[in-house]
Length: 211
Length: 211
Ligand SMILES: [Zn+2]
Ligand SMILES: [Zn+2]
View 1 (tube, rainbow over the protein chains, first blue to last red):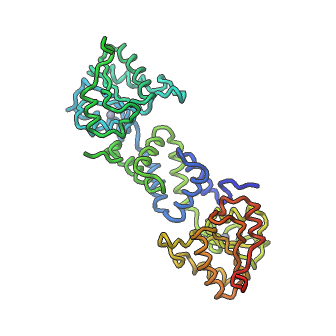
View 2: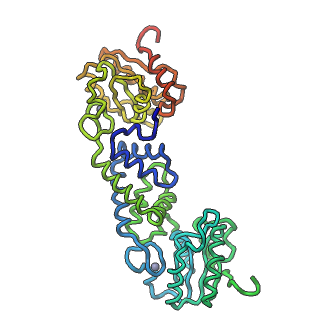
View 3: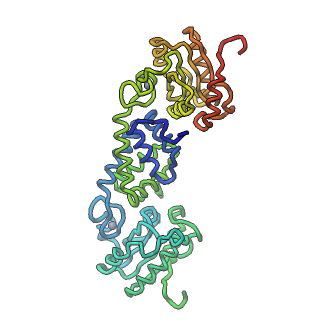
């Protein structure tokens, strides 16, 4: 006997499609997809319309900055367009939220590169799947002298840092890592700005004999 | 120092709008709204587009059946249009999912009325806020002789049933309630069909001396 999640919306194609689309959101199962669809159509059609429109608009308008890879409206984002920053420093982070965590310290005046991901060997995401060519290009074409690796201090972030350290050293650039002021296992996004600021000041160069 | 959920998308209006729209979903806080937006734009733009389009389509095309109040494409849904059903029986349920639970028993051949909600005194939702006029109209204009109250056996469902029993009796109609084969505190949607079928057969008339 069929008791699938769609029985309640039997024959209502737009609703079945909506439930299917909601199910693709991470963490949303068949039952909660049905509840969400029900809630939106019954109690908050305004929210449904706003979400529908903003999804299509974001997909249409948001792309990646050609320099730092962060989300961006135009070809080059506002940070990369800011000529008052220090061109010799490039801070590599995993996500836009991590970039925001560094900016919030108000102590960093270099540029950024956003990986938009991390190596995750346990999930089968090898470091090679990061867009290394784009970052490599960024380093080639610029006055960058030091790359600050600000990936998270998780297994994935550390694996990513190890991979990048190796690649960047071959380009004869200085590589540093945030000091371990950030708690082991912690994520930048959830660390208070003063700790992040401390870790930034205490960054240590990689590849020296004190390693 | 600002560490709001939007810092990461600073100046990116379409992204800020998307995060705001996602936050209106029940159970989605600022942090998970940001993570959802990030995931959709970074890893699954196809899902974002599908969800955006299906939301707008559902809002545009889904309305309520003029007879049973269930979600519907057209003026009258397929169940209400089915003339082989028994016009003397009307089963009142809280949600489309509850209707599906009754249909899944394959033992009921009457019609339905979907409240699209329930009285919830503790949340300040008084029974009067249910669309009683629409149900009343449905009862007035039809050959219904018996109303089967199939609201859930929760506090809210019971309060709703008490309210409706009172109103429907004044119309000189027979009122029955599903038998308590459904566990106390349980919800129809999660009950196996055979239990629901049993409860349907054992429904008892309300307002008699054996009450
Ligand atoms: Zn940029
Ligand atoms: Zn109907």
